Length: 134
Length: 289
Image (cartoon, rainbow over all chains, first blue to last red; front, side):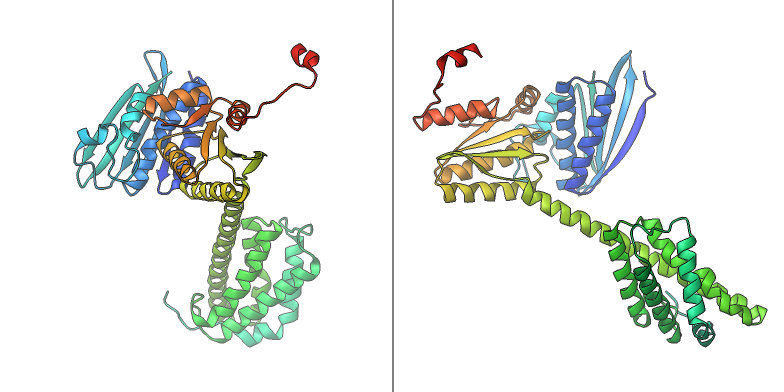
């Protein structure tokens, strides 16, 4: 097992979302994720990063490759310091959107990963941590 | 920036203008970063002479504030040189060293001054040239960004060709990231092509799109809806297995859109809808395949 790695990517513009996708895919390839798992974690990263840029006014993403019980996994934490989510339950519901999107980003992301943890405080910002095990 | 009055004895330097210029040019050619492959001797001499004379002109004003009006000519000259060097392929350090290498040659005429005045003047010129080097570096950076921006815009236009496959059938092979700006161009060129060709079927092929997330899906759905309003049916092809599974997990549905694994499959469906089909002219070799 390679040593665990940690990469931080700033998220300010749409271009940063693209570059985060590249970094996540790179790390997923290093972990030898299957093509399907690569696609899932990259798509999940894309959703969260776009949320942070559009709703959170920018933030950052931390990609960590880790070892747990002999399993390789990729952990992604996306943090923004935006307005926060007033009603997390609503936001997690499929079809709910405050920004004219499809409203599937958060609920869909949860189904794409093995672990999903969302913390949000109004006025403080939002942090989402997801893990995909190999 | 606080601007103090210059203490540099400009007449002294100007009296030795030719010597300073020559030794500066010689210094640049001698240096490890000289790029005779990128710039001709005459251009190098012309740029050097332009910078030196403009520098003296700036010093004449007595102001040391390089962002002030007295140094406007200098900034313009550095801008021109820096941008031309971006295009010629000089590296950032090579471009900055062009200015920094002026230090030694310009200190030379100051030897005639008495030690205390000399130290003061050298210190001042040293700082000044450092600041000018920073200006050059910033302009270089801007120039690079402009080049990148232009390339992005060119890619935007280039990478969205609408192809006519058959009478009444268009194909739009999408490649790369479908960020919102590009999707706009894609949508416009597809709708325009539908009008221009009078096509009734458009196939959007996403084989070359690495990630389909909810935003990309939304753009696709909107494009399909807009095309439908113009009387054309869209099909989406090139959905790879991993993309299909990811779309399902995301909960995205593509209502009323025919989707196919390959562009070829979609093309056959399109032909069928137009009441046409492909017939083998030689049944024997077609069966043998």
